[in-house]
Amino acid sequence: MNMIKEQTLEQEYVAAKKKSAKPMLWISMISMVMFFAGLTSAYVISMKRDDWVSFELPQSFYISTFLIVASSVTLFLSQRFLKQDKRQLSLITVIITLLLGVGFIWQQYVGFNQLRSIGLFFTGPESTVSTSFIIGITFMHVLHLIAGIIVLFVVIYNHFKYKYKSDDMLGFELGAIFWHFVDILWIYLFFFFYFIR
Image (cartoon, rainbow, N blue to C red; front, side, top):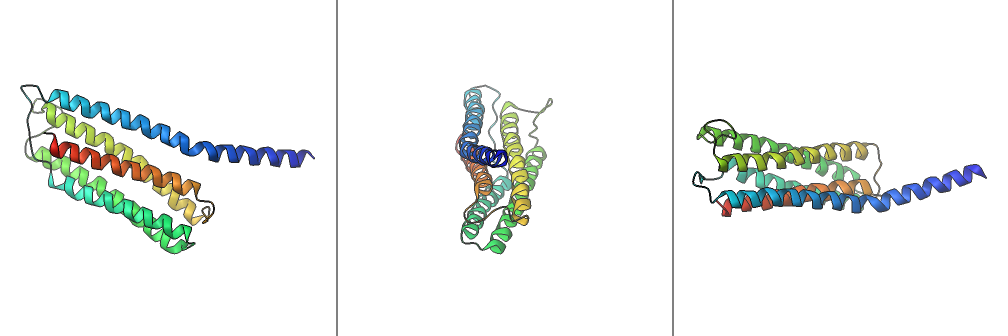
């Protein structure tokens, strides 16, 4: 009798945990949106300063934008393959997503170096408010993307362990929602920096 009661309580706990997982993720993403909205608002206000410097976005930021959009496409395909029980294709496309994400981070690093090569620095006597903002905001996004990379590693690990099925994909779905969110966030930042200089 006690064993049945314990199993029932455990099932209820798992069901409650699953039910609250997506709302908790959405709440954390809303807080991230507010954080970046604050940073970009400060950027707009600071543009009125006399020492504001305008400059072209590094070429690598364009490449990284392509890579992160492509990564969202491959993750979408991976999720679709998993729903169709095509596990091998799903695993391959989620690994491609991971590689595209790493490529994005590399291109961001290249972009920081391109800014430095034309004399634009984040800190120090040669830094400007505009470069400090763009590098700082971009770096904060990269930190969120690194969290996304960790999430993808967890998804890949669980994929190998056969934890996802076409009728039980919550962990995969949570990872995909976060990854797509980070993708959309970068697209917003890219167009923000492109049009507001």
